[in-house]
Each structure stands twice: as C-alpha cells, then as structure tokens.
Image (cartoon, rainbow, N blue to C red; front, side, top):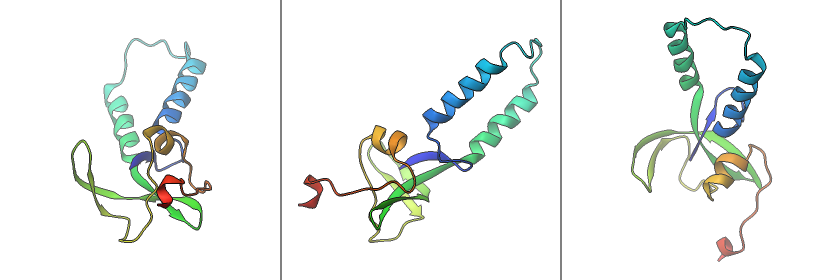
Length: 116
C-alpha cells in the first residue's frame, strides 16, 4: 500500500519537491511577519483530504492504481477493508519501487522468483 494525492499521480516525495520549487520561486514575494494560522491550517487540512491510500493491481500486464480503505494495521500488515476483491493480483515490492517509481498504467511482469 502507498499514498498518492487525489489530484495527480505524484508520490509524496515528488509533491514535496514540487512544493520546494514553488517556495524557492516565490521566496521574497511576501515578507510579511504575520502568518494567518487559520488559513495555513485550512490549507493543511485540504492537503490531507486529497491524500488517498492506494494499492497497485496487475491488470493485463499493466499496473492499475486502486484507492482502498484501510482498517487496523501493525508494523507488518494492514487490513484492506474495501477497494480490492479476493483473487486480485496485488503488486508488491520495495518501498522505493512501489511508492516512488511505480506509476498507474506502467507495464509490469512477474519476477522470475515469483513464478515458482
């Protein structure tokens, strides 16, 4: 399971880089000492609401991103309450491969070890 925003297919790391670029571009535009905390909190809440928990399914040799609802979890397991069905082929891999590199619609194939 990974987290993506509802607006785009960007990973959390890609979103952070985008924010940093915008902040660098806009640096010095508004040097006001006062920060509107209410507006800042509203913006943070809006961003949290856009975040979706997703899994990638293997559908005809392509990755399909599917939103899921999760339940209880621990360090190893997470309960998926809805969004996938028994028999769906869920793509698994390292954090880097799933959360940062895998994109919706990317071609996927079985690992040789996984074909046993």
